[in-house]
Structures are given as structure tokens and as C-alpha cells.
Length: 131
Image (cartoon, rainbow, N blue to C red; front, side, top):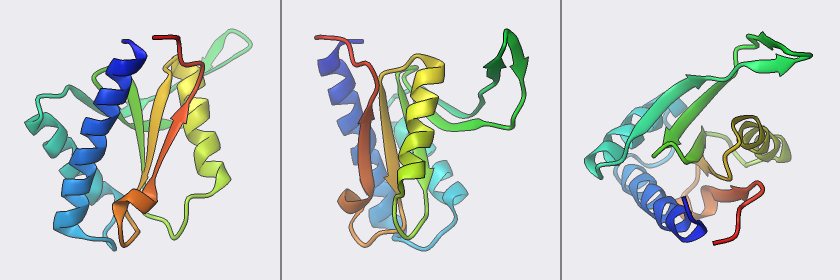
């Protein structure tokens, strides 16, 4: 997927998240926002994988550490959802690690526990190829 296609897709995902946040507001559990966002993304005709198992490879073996990716949209963008008072550096590090381990280039960190969703969206890039 080109950089322009990834950017267009990320805008569509954020639009879906904004619809969910407008409808529900802050204060619910992450799982509620996740279910509603999956619904919105599917209504947009986007393929969504939810709660994907992410094994850790260590010294050539696969170790189950219980990692799960919240969403992967169109097999291209990882979406990590939060309902926290503030996005912390550890949340960004988690998403960057998921991008590195899955060899994907773009991730969205979306915190629904904010008054305005645009304040809760962080876009992270890992080794984005040229357009």
C-alpha cells in the first residue's frame, strides 16, 4: 500500500472513530468502543481483524506472551485503543513494537477517554516506504 493510500485509509479510520465517540462520548470500557468501531469500519466496507494474537519470537522460537493487537484494518494499519486519562510514552512504545513485530508501517493510537476525540488520536509511523 502506498503512503497516500495509507494516509487516506487512516483518515477513514479516524472518521469512524469520531462517529463512535460522538455517539457514545467518553467514560465507557475499551471493549465497548472496540465493538462499535469494528461495526463502523465494516459499514465503511473495510476489512477488520480484531484481537489478533501476536506471538513473540525469541531466539528462533515462538513464545506466547499474551499479546493481542486490538485491530488491524485492511491488513495495513494497526489500531490500538485506549480509555485512559492521558496517552503515555509506554502506549506509543507498545504500538511501535506491534508495528515492528508485524512489519507494518502505520498505526493509530486512539484514546476515547477525552472530551474531543481529535485530542486523543496519535498517528505513529515505522519505516514508512516512499510513495
